[in-house]
Image (tube, rainbow, N blue to C red; front, side, top):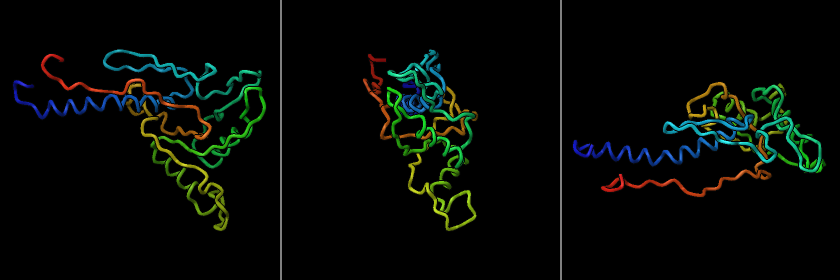
Length: 206
């Protein structure tokens, strides 16, 4: 490409290459939710397959009906049976899990308040969440003077990469995924041990 004067094309490829690292990190974070019912997933990059372990502290998947406690035989559930699509009723079922399935490690009931609804970028799901949060009345009522209990109750976060395959391609089977999160009680964090970097091609380092 240097011999044929394609300098602009070289710069485009270098620029695109600089985006690969951050995009891969973003995809891996989203896949913690994409594969939340699994303990691992396999991705292929550059012809190499890598198995990513995504178990949580008790050795189970992020979403499980039998999460373990360290000081009690009691288990807890953080996944709604049947995985219903988003609706007022489905949201209330998720809220009920926060009320009835939140314990300390001795099996004693604890309080935890959800404050975030995380969804994919599915337009139908996004609109349903927005309608519920911003309606001027109870969405299940014909009475316009009924108070909407969800007004200002949640922050809606949209992820554009949850509904994807392990390779990052669109996956329509996951388009309705949504999660109820207590962000202030979360212990999830991202540790960057080595930020992505790119060495500009030059004589001697190709």
